[in-house]
Amino acid sequence: MKKILVTGGTGFIGSHTTVELQQKGYEVIILDNLSNSQEDVIDNITKITGVRPTFGKIDVADRTQLFDFLAKHQGIESIIHFAASKAVGESVKEPLKYYRNNVNGVINILEAMKEFGISNLVFSSSCTVYGQPEVLPVTEQSPIQPALSPYGNTKQINEEIIRDFIKVNPELHAICLRYFNPVGAHPSSLIGELPLGVPANLIPFITQTAAGIRECLSIFGNDYDTPDGTCIRDYIDIVDLANAHIAAINRMEQGKQKTGVEFFNIGTGNGLSVLELVKTFEEATGQKLNYKIVGRREGDIEKVWADTSVANNELGWKAVVPISQTMLNAWNWQKKISNIK
Ligand code: NAD
Ligand code: UD1
Image (cartoon, rainbow, N blue to C red; front, side):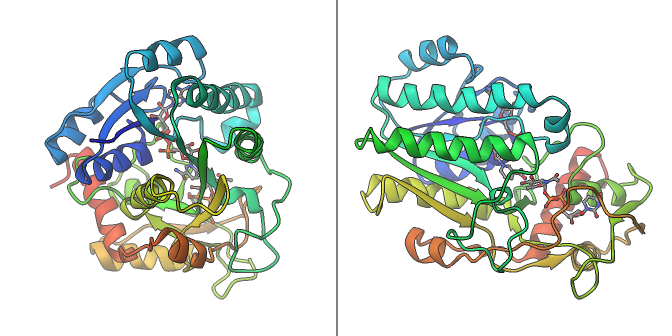
């Protein structure tokens, strides 16, 4: 069995990716410092797959901890590096926390690849690197724009660090996946997103409103230059997203890369407005959602969605889960964690 290290593996995207990896026969070793997740996620992954992943409570930004851990787990061929701090608003208030955690994490991971002979890396990047693109849909050739937050800046800096390092270490390979908006939960309702406090992101706010935890969803602006005036995003199902990582690993394992570092947009290719998404949620779940229109949120992008043709053709990967099913999975997960029958 091929061994793979998943950093941030108890988090939202890492846990779903671990399930898909295990189901495709990989031996998964998870490392997470539990700064934004809980260890019982490991139990729930095990319930889904029947296989318990190895787990280490390790801070990837601490080089000694990481190296000691890897010295005990030889034979790893690939790393999927999810571990990072990801709250955009917090990154504006505490920029150094973000630079320290997210940039040191990548530097340590790259050094570890060299030291322990680990060939392949998948890095979690974001469509945030494109800012508000002038031309839609966004291709991988669209210009990278100045970052709107320290969080976004860490993604740009990390892409550059990876590019520079792979250039002089041609035996190593990397793929940066630029996610659009990851949403949903595993169909088993055993794992999903667990936001701390009041959710900043749309889907957890929607499901918590439907569950009665929040009184009302505030829709941030209906005066944008879009058909219904609300912002447009490309919402990608979490299991589809997880599978994009496996396609990326397979590409590197099979030596199919065209350059040492590659970049792929991971989305559905379809843009949905906030109002369209609310309507889809209501239709898919039968839940009426209490919402009101309020002013714009500072820093929001008006519209963005992916051109996924490169990912489709090169990775042989495509998003397949319908958004109505994604909304139903997100709602079932919310019901589970809120004990709603
Ligand atoms: P998450 O917070 O659910 O998962 C990240 C995990 O990393 C958490 O379990 C956290 O405890 C862990 N972690 C953080 N710092 C660590 C450290 N120093 N050492 C070890 N573990 C550490 O977030 P997620 O949504 O699963 O995101 C995963 C990755 O994808 C992140 O790099 C994020 O920036 C990126 N990303 C996420 C989104 C999104 O909307 N969710 C969009 C684009 C990119
Ligand atoms: C956010 C991050 C971005 C990250 C992306 C991936 C910010 C500014 N950006 O983007 O860096 O890559 O997540 O998940 O946080 N909305 C409401 N009401 C709410 C919440 C959201 O109307 O209560 C709207 C927003 O205005 C936006 C859409 O819903 O139009 C999606 O918002 P959100 O889920 O926060 O994601 P992004 O803003 O796309």
